[in-house]
Image (cartoon, rainbow, N blue to C red; front, top):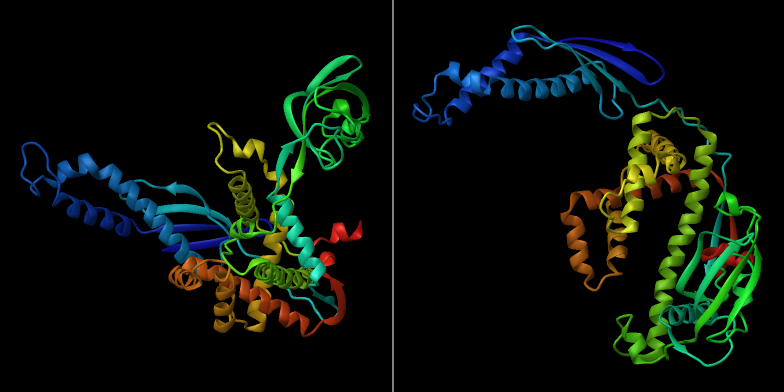
Length: 438
């Protein structure tokens, strides 16, 4: 096999590869002979079809198959020979594919960049700690009650916290506009899900009443023609409903898998879940600080192929959150690459930097830490041992845990060199920083 390599631009490389004709033709001949043993054609017994006929019938298909395999195999052999590491699949351009002649093709591809690690001694990281108070547990239980609440119609004026069923029609300069009309719309007053002033205008209305309210659309509203515009809404209230919270009794506890123990057991269960979430959040805050500083302190040239692949991963993750897509759903049009490029570049960059830290520090995923993480995941399931066994029986799942453990070890490796300060916080400040700020 003959190989020549050239650098075209940046991370792009071009391999010109030649494979002797004997290698290709020999493999084609071998496969045709194997196939001939099982071929049945009218006028011939099984395995007795002349090779000339076999080649006429199947030669083109077998050649295509063999050439494809030879190109793939010889490309990776050439890459190893030239000591280059392809980032993504190559673009193949055939030069000579004729029967009886040496196979020649050009493979264009990107390589992984070299990452020069910077000194992390100057990193500054704050390690937070927080306790869960009885009030935090009570607040969480109220959140769970609210999530399980039902609505009961009432014969009174609507107030904040009520749910109203309404019909409305919006007009601008006396003309209706797109998206400004609905019938039978359920709205919780105080949810701030509508434009400013809309929900306030409904407070005090009763079922059966109609009212026209004046509002002004925000300057950053998504519809260009409505940004900062004055408008009117004719609103009719169909029903007013009051929220009914479930009582802290057995039927409510059973929704969370608790059959006995009453309120004390439920509080204990809720607190255990909060502690697990808090632990992960505290770890995540430290990890985010480390990763942010790794990104800021390193400039890495990114292979386009890796970024494109990561864009597709992020798009598919979003599609999975949407659930089943309707027929004709065009993901690339509705969720264009530009939506994901920034996050994709960050993830690829971090992956390359973290990988270099792992190599430089000679880190390996600690089996005990892997086992501990799997066990922690398993505690959230009804049969933990079944989950543990499943993880250890699925190489791909276990590899994901090993990767997470390795990232944790990278963080600890950097923290050992960084300037770390301690800060005490609260549960709300850690779990809901925006709410705590308000």
